[in-house]
Length: 175
Image (cartoon, rainbow, N blue to C red; front, side, top):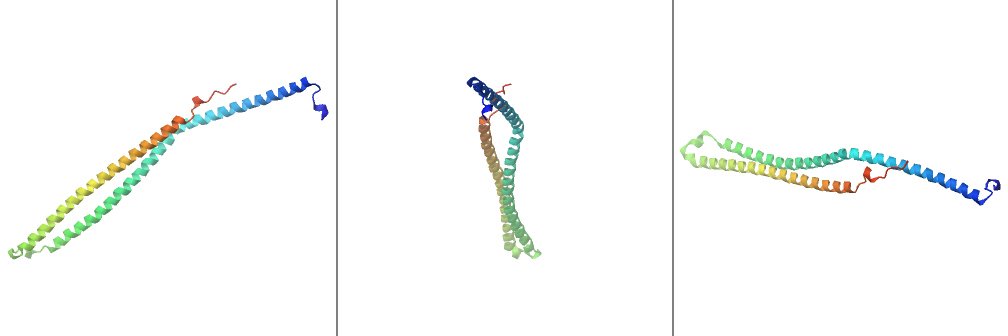
Protein backbone atom coordinates (compact mmCIF):
# COMPACT_ATOMS: atom_id res chain seq x y z
CA UNK A 1 0.00 0.00 0.00
CA UNK A 2 1.29 3.43 -0.80
CA UNK A 3 0.62 4.77 2.71
CA UNK A 4 3.10 2.15 4.17
CA UNK A 5 6.00 3.55 2.18
CA UNK A 6 8.17 6.17 3.85
CA UNK A 7 7.72 9.65 2.45
CA UNK A 8 11.38 10.44 1.88
CA UNK A 9 14.45 8.57 0.83
CA UNK A 10 16.06 9.29 4.23
CA UNK A 11 13.11 7.70 6.04
CA UNK A 12 13.28 4.72 3.70
CA UNK A 13 17.04 4.36 4.27
CA UNK A 14 16.56 4.67 8.04
CA UNK A 15 13.85 1.95 8.04
CA UNK A 16 16.06 -0.30 5.92
CA UNK A 17 19.00 0.35 8.26
CA UNK A 18 16.89 -0.53 11.33
CA UNK A 19 15.71 -3.75 9.67
CA UNK A 20 19.27 -4.71 8.74
CA UNK A 21 20.52 -3.98 12.28
CA UNK A 22 17.68 -6.10 13.67
CA UNK A 23 18.59 -8.95 11.30
CA UNK A 24 22.26 -8.63 12.25
CA UNK A 25 21.38 -8.74 15.93
CA UNK A 26 19.23 -11.84 15.39
CA UNK A 27 22.00 -13.59 13.43
CA UNK A 28 24.54 -12.70 16.13
CA UNK A 29 22.28 -14.20 18.81
CA UNK A 30 21.71 -17.31 16.69
CA UNK A 31 25.42 -17.62 15.86
CA UNK A 32 26.39 -17.31 19.53
CA UNK A 33 23.79 -19.87 20.60
CA UNK A 34 25.11 -22.26 17.93
CA UNK A 35 28.68 -21.73 19.18
CA UNK A 36 27.59 -22.35 22.76
CA UNK A 37 25.72 -25.52 21.77
CA UNK A 38 28.71 -26.71 19.72
CA UNK A 39 31.04 -26.06 22.66
CA UNK A 40 28.72 -28.07 24.91
CA UNK A 41 28.74 -30.95 22.42
CA UNK A 42 32.54 -30.83 22.17
CA UNK A 43 32.81 -30.81 25.96
CA UNK A 44 30.57 -33.88 26.15
CA UNK A 45 32.62 -35.52 23.38
CA UNK A 46 35.83 -34.92 25.32
CA UNK A 47 34.27 -36.35 28.49
CA UNK A 48 33.02 -39.58 26.87
CA UNK A 49 36.00 -40.12 24.57
CA UNK A 50 38.00 -42.17 27.13
CA UNK A 51 35.02 -44.49 27.60
CA UNK A 52 34.58 -44.95 23.86
CA UNK A 53 38.30 -45.67 23.45
CA UNK A 54 38.18 -48.20 26.29
CA UNK A 55 35.14 -49.90 24.76
CA UNK A 56 36.92 -50.12 21.41
CA UNK A 57 40.03 -51.65 23.04
CA UNK A 58 37.85 -54.07 25.03
CA UNK A 59 36.09 -55.11 21.83
CA UNK A 60 39.43 -55.64 20.08
CA UNK A 61 40.68 -57.70 23.03
CA UNK A 62 37.52 -59.83 23.06
CA UNK A 63 37.85 -60.46 19.33
CA UNK A 64 41.45 -61.64 19.73
CA UNK A 65 40.59 -63.72 22.80
CA UNK A 66 37.96 -65.50 20.73
CA UNK A 67 40.49 -66.16 17.98
CA UNK A 68 42.93 -67.53 20.56
CA UNK A 69 40.24 -69.70 22.11
CA UNK A 70 39.20 -71.06 18.71
CA UNK A 71 42.79 -71.80 17.64
CA UNK A 72 43.77 -73.47 20.91
CA UNK A 73 40.49 -75.39 20.85
CA UNK A 74 41.38 -76.83 17.45
CA UNK A 75 44.85 -77.80 18.65
CA UNK A 76 43.40 -79.43 21.78
CA UNK A 77 40.78 -81.28 19.76
CA UNK A 78 43.43 -82.79 17.47
CA UNK A 79 45.59 -83.65 20.48
CA UNK A 80 42.69 -85.35 22.26
CA UNK A 81 42.08 -87.49 19.17
CA UNK A 82 45.75 -88.46 19.11
CA UNK A 83 45.69 -89.12 22.87
CA UNK A 84 42.70 -91.39 22.39
CA UNK A 85 44.62 -93.30 19.70
CA UNK A 86 47.60 -93.71 22.04
CA UNK A 87 45.31 -94.93 24.83
CA UNK A 88 43.72 -97.44 22.45
CA UNK A 89 47.15 -98.81 21.47
CA UNK A 90 48.09 -98.95 25.16
CA UNK A 91 44.91 -100.93 25.92
CA UNK A 92 45.67 -103.24 23.01
CA UNK A 93 49.16 -103.85 24.36
CA UNK A 94 47.72 -104.50 27.82
CA UNK A 95 45.27 -107.01 26.37
CA UNK A 96 48.16 -108.81 24.64
CA UNK A 97 49.86 -109.36 27.98
CA UNK A 98 49.17 -112.76 29.49
CA UNK A 99 51.10 -115.11 31.82
CA UNK A 100 52.29 -117.35 29.00
CA UNK A 101 54.45 -114.51 27.62
CA UNK A 102 56.71 -115.04 30.65
CA UNK A 103 57.71 -118.47 29.32
CA UNK A 104 61.24 -118.54 27.80
CA UNK A 105 59.81 -119.78 24.47
CA UNK A 106 57.76 -116.55 24.15
CA UNK A 107 60.63 -114.19 24.93
CA UNK A 108 60.69 -112.75 21.38
CA UNK A 109 56.96 -111.98 21.53
CA UNK A 110 57.38 -110.32 24.91
CA UNK A 111 60.36 -108.26 23.69
CA UNK A 112 58.44 -107.21 20.59
CA UNK A 113 55.45 -106.17 22.71
CA UNK A 114 57.76 -104.26 25.10
CA UNK A 115 59.42 -102.47 22.17
CA UNK A 116 56.03 -101.52 20.72
CA UNK A 117 54.96 -100.13 24.11
CA UNK A 118 58.25 -98.21 24.51
CA UNK A 119 57.73 -96.74 21.02
CA UNK A 120 54.13 -95.81 21.90
CA UNK A 121 55.29 -94.12 25.10
CA UNK A 122 57.99 -92.21 23.21
CA UNK A 123 55.50 -91.20 20.52
CA UNK A 124 53.08 -90.05 23.23
CA UNK A 125 55.77 -88.04 25.06
CA UNK A 126 56.88 -86.48 21.76
CA UNK A 127 53.24 -85.73 20.90
CA UNK A 128 52.67 -84.09 24.28
CA UNK A 129 55.78 -81.96 23.80
CA UNK A 130 54.68 -81.05 20.25
CA UNK A 131 51.19 -80.15 21.49
CA UNK A 132 52.67 -77.95 24.21
CA UNK A 133 54.89 -76.23 21.64
CA UNK A 134 51.96 -75.73 19.26
CA UNK A 135 49.86 -74.19 22.05
CA UNK A 136 52.73 -71.87 23.02
CA UNK A 137 53.32 -70.87 19.38
CA UNK A 138 49.61 -70.25 18.92
CA UNK A 139 49.49 -68.08 22.05
CA UNK A 140 52.56 -66.11 20.93
CA UNK A 141 51.14 -65.59 17.43
CA UNK A 142 47.76 -64.49 18.77
CA UNK A 143 49.45 -62.12 21.23
CA UNK A 144 51.57 -60.63 18.45
CA UNK A 145 48.47 -60.20 16.28
CA UNK A 146 46.66 -58.48 19.16
CA UNK A 147 49.56 -56.13 19.86
CA UNK A 148 49.83 -55.32 16.16
CA UNK A 149 46.09 -54.68 15.88
CA UNK A 150 46.17 -52.58 19.05
CA UNK A 151 49.08 -50.53 17.71
CA UNK A 152 47.27 -49.96 14.41
CA UNK A 153 44.07 -48.99 16.23
CA UNK A 154 45.95 -46.64 18.56
CA UNK A 155 47.76 -44.99 15.66
CA UNK A 156 44.51 -44.42 13.77
CA UNK A 157 42.78 -43.14 16.90
CA UNK A 158 45.60 -40.70 17.67
CA UNK A 159 45.62 -39.44 14.08
CA UNK A 160 41.86 -38.91 14.26
CA UNK A 161 42.17 -37.13 17.60
CA UNK A 162 44.94 -34.91 16.24
CA UNK A 163 42.52 -33.76 13.54
CA UNK A 164 39.49 -33.36 15.80
CA UNK A 165 38.26 -29.99 16.98
CA UNK A 166 38.56 -29.18 20.67
CA UNK A 167 36.79 -26.61 22.83
CA UNK A 168 39.93 -24.45 22.67
CA UNK A 169 39.59 -24.28 18.87
CA UNK A 170 36.18 -22.58 19.11
CA UNK A 171 36.00 -18.85 19.51
CA UNK A 172 34.18 -17.58 22.57
CA UNK A 173 30.70 -16.33 21.73
CA UNK A 174 30.47 -12.56 21.78
CA UNK A 175 28.04 -11.02 24.24
